[in-house]
Structures are given as C-alpha cells and as structure tokens.
Length: 188
Image (spheres, rainbow, N blue to C red):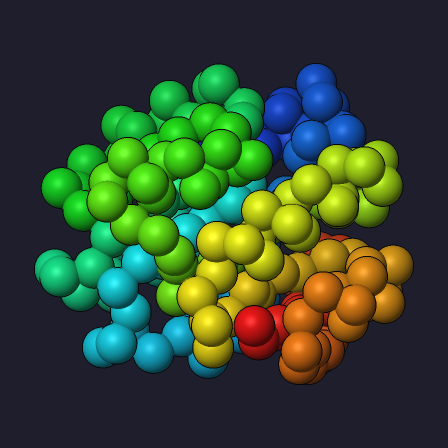
C-alpha cells in the first residue's frame, strides 16, 4: 500500500515536471491494465515491449506473466522512474532502456529482429506530428507480421493515423480509469 502511494506521488511529480512526456496525473487503473493485456497470448509470446513504463503498472503485469523462454524490453524516458523500475524488476529476461525510438537497435543487440507485442503508454497527444510518425514507423518496422501494438490514449485523436498504419484496429473504451481511456489494439 505504501509503495502504491509512493508511486502515485512520484508519477504526479513527474507529470508536473514534464507534462509533455508524462501524459496523466496518475498511473493506469487495474481495469485499464486488464484490458490492455486481454489479447496477449503469454504462452506463445517470445518478445514483449513496453513503451512509456512510468511507475511500472504494466511492467508488473508483464513480469508476473512473462514465460521463462521470452524476453521483455521496457522503455522509460524519465530518469527517476526508470531507476525505480530497474530496482523493482530484476529479471534475467527483462531489460530496461530509455529511448523507445531505439527499440530496433536494442532488440538487434539481443539477436532479435521483431516483437510479438508492443504495449504503449506513450502520450501521443502531447507529441509533435513528426515524433508520432517516428514512433509509429519504429513500431511498424519492429512488430512481427500478425503481432499486436496495444496502446491507450485519452482521446480518439490518434485513431485515423493508427488506421493508416495498421491493417486492423479495434477500439474500446475503459471508463473506469482516471481519465477514461481508449484502448487501440492494432494488428500488423
């Protein structure tokens, strides 16, 4: 309980310090977390990526379900949150890095050429169009055919751009989250 309160305070502080890179005032709810991972087939997962890990709400879920044969790559730009993630999640098959745009290079260094699942908490609405395009290009190039890119946003602003990049995009609303969130499940 104390850890959850500390994480919420740290998250809020990071939002105040850098609202362009931290998209919310509080971490994701358990309802949003369950919806994000609903379509992940853990038994067949080889490579799972998380972009914008924050305080580790999704990272916790990944660390508890990641098969021993699989690898996870967790990206968080904020130095303090990334340091905390490194302290909390010390698994041999889970690597923490800072720059999500370097996703392909990080995977290549580990002898991997694609990811089965890319989970995103990136605040695309706060990004320039150029940065959104760079991230979506990187994600599209890194995701294996048939792989899923699962992201949430607080508006439908990204929907048309996602539909231009992915062959299949499903949208759902998670109302029990602060703020309510739209989840995009995009198949390559």
